[in-house]
Image (tube, rainbow, N blue to C red; front, top):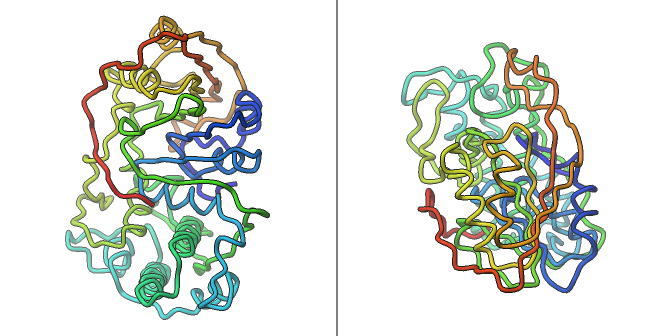
Length: 359
């Protein structure tokens, strides 16, 4: 399972989702909004060929790591996976971008003192990021090995981040986990190789086959993932963007999601579902979402049969004290099966982001 706390994570309900999906049918399991890859991984373990997609490169990297087996990442040039992790952990610290912008000792261009990471951990993140790129540049890593080490670094950074759960803000006082020394740990890889591909595309550009099973876990609320996980994105991209404000946000508007806008969410979700071209679509949704289940049912039932499965009441994401007073949300899976002659050439919402990079 994923080791990054993620808004809307399906780690606790993935079994119920895969039970509704049923056994592989010869098509692919298309995880349209893969997040940290927990559903993609379980689909692969269940025998599905998986196509996972997310508009954030960091999520695509995390998902790739979930789908790898030992055979996929031999690390021949570095003496094996465990040896690569050991070498990464003794990498010399480096005063790079994360140190400069997201630690109290760094010299932020804007003059803000940001406490996302301690000085030592910020320098360790920078040093490890440089080391991974150096290995890659010198031909010591395959594409999958690079993705795995980046994912392991993201998870290590997340364990010592001085945050309440996301990178929308940092905490004023240091938590105990944030004061620990950052160390990368090897993960449990899949026991056998899975058939998979991972992409980082605009969801409205995905081209599917009728027999694919599409699984949609879209954003439910106004929280934009590109903003809430901006530091993870920066670590993966490895750039030095202009950041602003107290929180040090990088520009994220090009990855703004139409599903996060209350006035656009229903149209976007219905158009995506109908326009994908698959015979069957599963949609995870929540009782706190912008779109109500009756609205979503009404928008889809003219093009296919709709069944709604209530799967669990789960603890709500709690970013602040006000949210602590809210108990739980109900998770649903809407199952949509296309009528034989329903149209698929539905008008699509104007794109809110464009991506061409593949993980």
